[in-house]
Image 1 (cartoon, rainbow, N blue to C red):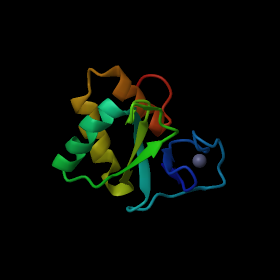
Image 2: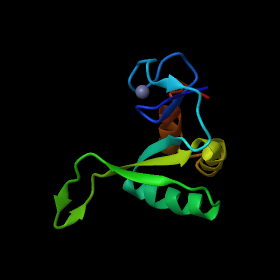
Image 3: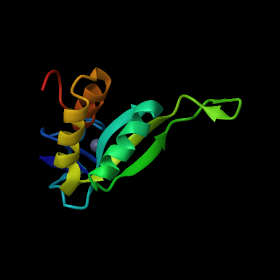
Length: 118
Ligand SMILES: [Zn+2]
């Protein structure tokens, strides 16, 4: 398992799944922030409290430009980052809770750079 310092993602391969390069890859360290998943607001609102409940430290970043309609933003996506040391536990937690939710499972797989079924 290698870590892309540029994209803050893990990869099983020789290249980062996001930037498609190997230049920024190195062995992950325990406190490296790792992209857990990128999800819509409704899912982010569920995932945050779940991580908190399990005492998994995380950072949530708002992505892209938000569309403001009547002062309320609808189209925001959120990227969750957890320390590498907590990544496996966070992944297991969300995979279990969202076992029937294809959207979350896709998001988790996509962030991990996994192709196809797991
Ligand atoms: Zn990268």
